[in-house]
Length: 444
Ligand SMILES: *Cc1c(COP(=O)(O)O)cnc(C)c1O
Image (cartoon, rainbow, N blue to C red; front, side):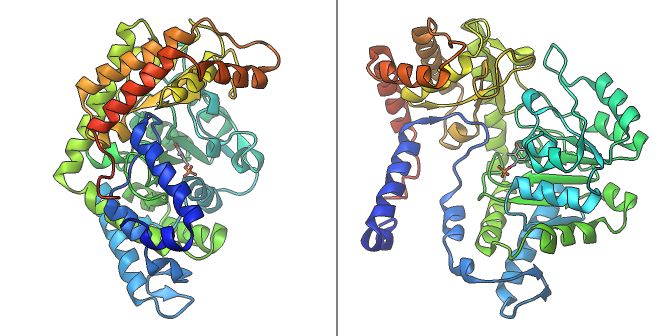
């Protein structure tokens, strides 16, 4: 039985985990940064490797007893090198944000200028947003999207030439088109900056060849391992041949920045699970999976457009899309997220380009297909899901956010909608769809 010891010795924790398993099983997970790791990945995570201290790197550790941990870490590194065609990899960052912190530490002095896409336009917190360390300790010069939702390369050129940044980030959390690695490498080369590709979201698509690789263009590549790559929560920093040409000591500096710069002992159980996920990503089945992610996203996008919704850039090239709900009302993303959650459809509210509301009550929602594709859903199911979303949004379209008292307003509509019959019906239909695509049948 799954969790048999935990159920016996700490039933309180076990019951909460089992309830979360039920939630994952019977809801539609459309958050584009989430996925369902394989049972093999889960098994590797739950091992005795968590007991070990192994500060340092394979062959040069501060503690004894690292014979097998070295084997695990070297295996993860070798697989990542092969998959992403890079000469150097560090697999120790605890997550995407710490990986990016290590890049700053390796490449910048405090107060140096950095450039990333504005958070509200789809960039990541760690690329210079004002409340993050990256916006507080470095001089952040953000770039933006055009009116049409594509990156404004003219602005990127202008800012880069004017401010001469040390680092230019090309990598996004809510950008729906191909990442322009080549164009960014031209800018970075022209001004002598490090070009860092952050492929946290698209790593699985890059690994499978469904999105162009940044390897020929970037100096450094950072990624999480838990999004489209479908591994454990973790991250990697890779250095390309181009990066080593620019700076032959870059690898050493990145290693030092990760440990002892920003981290202590590596999470060896996670490293093992990363090795497993990378092994999976090398198989032909994973390529099929990645193809289906994109096909599903394109179908979901076109169905939503046919219901009359406005999508940023009118579609998607990758695994996610942004629905601009401004035509319903400004700030409607926050209402949509609540209503969809009650119907068993998990999405996240998101700012849209030229947002007229705030990041906490934005006007859009972000939808992605990696998790539902892992369950085996295909184009036909995407059409069904678009129909569910439309039924829910139609039902709540008369609500609009008041200028004040927004928190209590959201609470009030949540109570009202929990009694709503249409939402209850959609909830039932969502459950039936989920039952047709069983999640973790092995875990019982
Ligand atoms: C998710 C993400 C990260 C950070 O990942 P965490 O593991 O949540 O710290 C970094 N960069 C981008 C572009 C992301 O989408």
